Image (cartoon, rainbow, N blue to C red):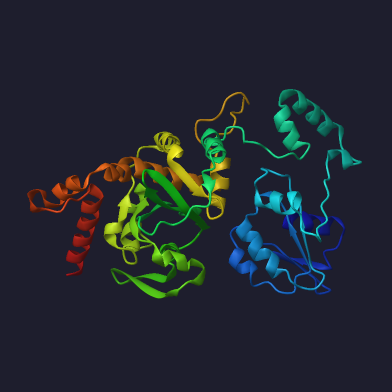
Length: 409
């Protein structure tokens, strides 16, 4: 949008009236256009004051949480929020909130191809071709109708069944059951986390979270519900715990069992003085609670996710972003437009989907087998040969910690 306006300023010869900056356009008369990505910059949005107009482009993907931040921020008298969108799904927050159930002061207009007096011949030919080739896609692309499911959506069948069986609902925290987390770690893009419990064989997914470019301190804060600062001091990793964060206060009561991390959490980085992610996180989270998910490959992970889905219940509000991602996670068409590519499309949905695979593999390989053990089985494991049972992940982490201690000595 910034480039579009900048191009129009140049085309109209108005360069002397406007200064185009990296994230803003400032007018000589004191006006200002500011540009923000809503999904990743919610915190910065809260600091805005005196805004007259907000234009939300591609508004169909804005979540309930983002609207709940943006709307109270635009509070100047006679201020307005404009939005443009092509509806995606009927249960999307934007569609439900502003089209199906619009506020009393909202002005809603459907503007379509037939309202364009300059509609070109080449687009008319494309429109007619799509009517014949794919009527379902035509209704969405040209008539603005909601999709039912994306072509190539990987979990379409499983999610459709979950919706039909009312397993996308309000999921309450069970204070007698342990809480697990499953992670996808991003380096230059998003990190995603799912919180879940296993209750009588059912997988209750409580909430999810994703952030781009965040630090390990930020992710530890999300787990503990309080301010955390992880620092490298000489050769040690030190975590400083601060006050509780009000918006995350409920997580302080979670009884965590295991935080399941992808296999690359073992990788050591030069930026962290050779410390792996699991070593850094262990400064804030108990080392014994950190475990590595077995690497069984992308396709096997997807199959594990599908096999798990019939046991899953997801909170429809606290998992809204993650549900959007899983619903849109897809394989795209090959260049020949006849078959789907083997690898899923890599976009913002991938991080939630990758963390979801971690959840499925952790449940299949470790958690479900632990649940199946009787109390007698567990007692025998604890006292067998007078030693404490250790997983390979536990052994690896303990060995790393011992070696680090030797180096310090």
